Structures are given as structure tokens and as C-alpha cells.
Amino acid sequence: MKLKSVKMLVCQACLDGDGEECHTPGCALYLHRVDLPIMPELYEVLAEVDEVEG
Image 1 (spheres, one colour):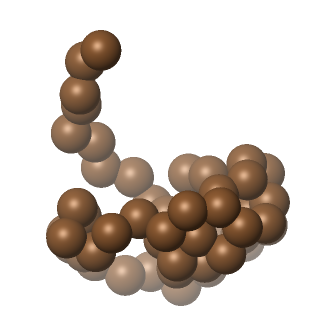
Image 2 (cartoon, one colour):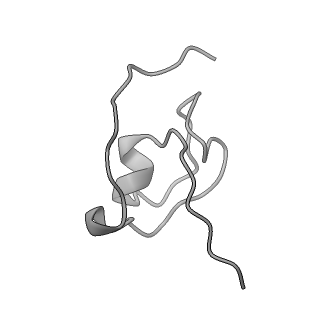
């Protein structure tokens, strides 16, 4: 299995693993279920933007 370093926008709820389907337009995981938090050690915040209008 290949590992890939990627750059994408992900909302804070998905990073926290809120466990519900994402409803944040602009999030790379929009309309996908994320039920496990992503460990902060595994990512670097390069910038923060306000929620994207859908």
C-alpha cells in the first residue's frame, strides 16, 4: 500500500473525529463519515480559512 503526503482542507469537526457525516462545504471529507480523530502529530496546519459557502 502506498502512502501519500497530501494537502487538503479539512474542517475541525473531522479532525476531532466527531463521528457523524460531515456537513461542512469545502471540507475534503464533506458528506463522508469520520468517526476517529486524526492525531495532531500527524498533520501541520498551514493556514485556516472560514467555512466555504456551498
